Image (tube, rainbow, N blue to C red; front, side):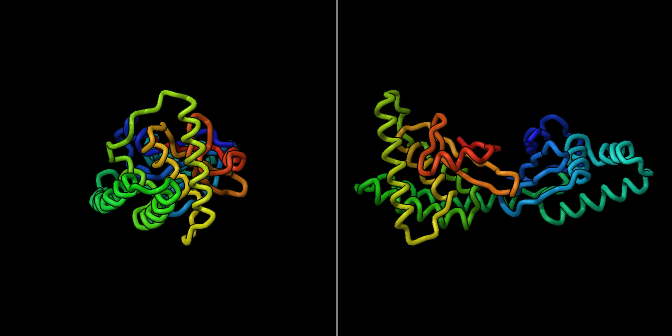
Length: 260
């Protein structure tokens, strides 16, 4: 069971004196048994031991000195050994690219990557305005999502696809919204079944979300986790209704992140 979710944005606002932060698009999930799962949405996922989870949590919230003091108190270690354990563990995570020193961080690479993802927008606008059936536009949007996610990652692609302001006005009529949601759901399901590319949950969620927003439906992308065995899943959701995926399957996952 997940007892706490830690992201860089929240920690940075609470305490600007910490010496390490999670990289953007990383999430730390603290579990009831004391262990943790570290998700880098731009890279790998990591299982963290109870001791490692304690070190990382205390470092992110209060700094590495706080982590050393907590380790001394928790495990009755001498300060030198605790300091060495903390530094070795944090250095390992820094080498993996999941934490960083705030003063050393350079956003240039991330910024360039995001800027390049904006190159997909003309294609996105073209797909949305094509005088073609919903099925054809869905097939094309899935293909664009496939390549964009592999080039720029899911967070970068979502951020770029959130940029257009040409979304339709939100639909107020419930019957019309239900009809459009079913239409998008069917189109995504059918296009996925016959697509030439290996379309998975990320592409389905992204495509469903974009088509729904384009039609004026206030959709969200959910990222969920299943802890044992560890697995992740993405889906598109509108008021607890799932579009473009199997609702029963999605209910097995605990949502840890939402994109509007």
